[in-house]
Amino acid sequence: MPRYSALALLRARFQGARYWKPLWTGRTLKAAYDVVVVGAGGHGLATAFHLARDHGLKVAVLERRLVGYGNVGRNTTILRSNYLLPENHYFYEDSLRRWETLSRDLNYNVMYSPRGVVDLCLSDGDMITASRRGNAMRLAGIDSELMELDALERFAPELAPRRSRRFPIVGALVQRRGGTARHDAVAWGYARGATALGVDIIEDCEVQGLCTEAGVATGVETSKGLVRANRVVFATAGHTGMVGAMLGVPLPIETHLLQAMVTEPIKPLINSVLIYVHPGHGETYVLQSDRGGVVMGGYLDGFPSYTREGQWHRLEEVVQGAADLLPEIGGLRILRQWAGTNDMTMDGSPIMDRVKYDNVFLNAGWCYGGFKTIPASGAACATLVATGLAPDIARGFRLSRFATGHLLDERGGGPFPVRL
Ligand SMILES: Cc1cc2nc3c(=O)[nH]c(=O)nc-3n(C[C@H](O)[C@H](O)[C@H](O)COP(=O)(O)OP(=O)(O)OC[C@H]3O[C@@H](n4cnc5c(N)ncnc54)[C@H](O)[C@@H]3O)c2cc1C
Image 1 (cartoon, rainbow, N blue to C red):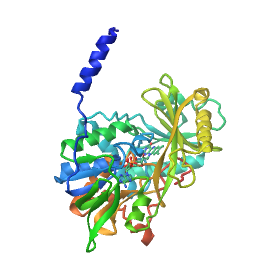
Image 2 (cartoon, rainbow, N blue to C red):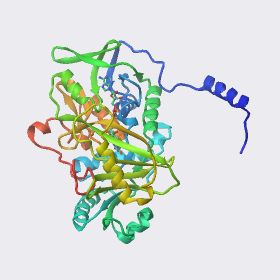
Image 3 (cartoon, rainbow, N blue to C red):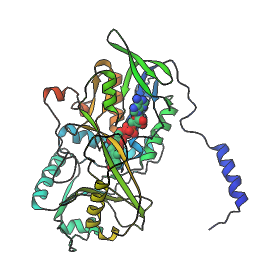
Image 4 (cartoon, rainbow, N blue to C red):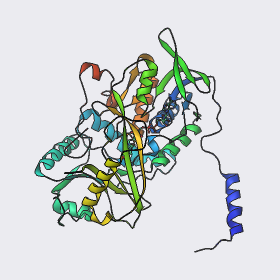
């Protein structure tokens, strides 16, 4: 291994600083745009990227804090398209296909890792539910495999499923193309790509109100002054209820906490993403990060909150569930725990539609599954905003479904038994 003197390292540090180019800062807010996108999370940035690239529009992204400060940088990065309802599984599959080429499209490595997503079954009843979801996916041309023990043991040897444990594993629904990507890289990649296309990304710029004239939105009031816009898109996951209050429209969304945690790094142990419902502790998922840490998560904390801290009892349940599944990790130390604010809709499916005004749009309600949809959501929302018509795969995400009762009560959103 080459050795460097302290002086050489110091010199390299300062030379690096001189040549390092910021990816998206340095833009000033202009007086007017074709479209203002509120929120520089994954959905806002991807929408802006596609508005500029596919529709040639002049766009600003206004972010009250920093690029990637929200849930796009706080999730556990799981990608999959194993949803049950047609309104969802075609959309999530479109997204998964886009993940496969995203690094090339953005010319930025988002570290897509198709390591497989394994929904474990603990009973024959789970297997029946799994086969229903798997068959629905296959009918739509989406890969899924129902594996019994032998096949599962070959696919995920870390489970050694025949080993005696506190509960039996009888099989799994596996999606091999599912996996993970690096979350910050996704925000950075879209921010860089959008900037290169002329999008102004303005940080530290909170949108505080909507300007309207004769029933049409004309712009937004921000902490940096008024900005005129022909169209406004709200992509403010975790804060959509506040947007509803700002617009004077009650939205069928609550903000709930979801937490996750990561252990000290260990050698590679877990090859895929393992998801299951522990009979005593509830939903648990486990994966290993590229740095070796074991990442764990579970269900929501159970009551609305904006604190981003998470309750101790949920952490305990998740860790117990994970250690029962993989006893080898029981002695590891947890290095970090964190939580994010999730936009929970009442049917578990998102909203991509106009809200209150013809030229104001909502890209929201992604619940705890919105990281995986960023590529499809950006493209679809840009089409809706630019042309006025949502593409077929996003037509089901209308806000009016909550008034008419045509809910997309997604039963494929989690492991078995399915919860929302
Ligand atoms: C612990 C955890 C684990 C998760 N795991 C997964 C997973 O494995 N797979 C998956 O698919 N999904 C997962 N999710 C869900 C996923 O992270 C979210 O659904 C998704 O990131 C939300 O969209 P976003 O990236 O646009 O949101 P955000 O990154 O939250 O972007 C919204 C932005 O809007 C800004 N904003 C809000 N109000 C204003 C305003 N008034 N003015 C200006 N800016 C504003 C916020 O500061 C924020 O930056 C997880 C979430 C959490 C918390």
